[in-house]
Image (tube, rainbow, N blue to C red; front, side, top):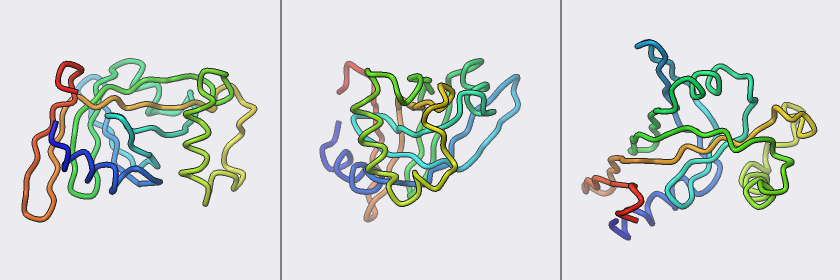
Length: 142
């Protein structure tokens, strides 16, 4: 994959970013804005396991994202409760990225339904400084 494109993605989204997340169930599209952070070919966020987006992703994991001259497709995954030992590193990175708002009382980290959402990208299109980058995130291309 183009190193310049990856550097642009990291610069734009490697911090607290608001992106659009689209899901579809039974040919009905749903879109919402979510806080997310990008690294290693995926967007990560914190959400509630019983939210509409998580119910929709459980039924159909294929999704789309968009923000700051980037759009892409991926698969949404519930990585489980933020307090799981195997989520410690990821949750720590998200706490730092979302530091401005994460402790505003909106989240209950003791609730096992407070989970990490990973959107593992499959493909995307990025625009920067007049250039278009067509991105393939498939494992064999990484």
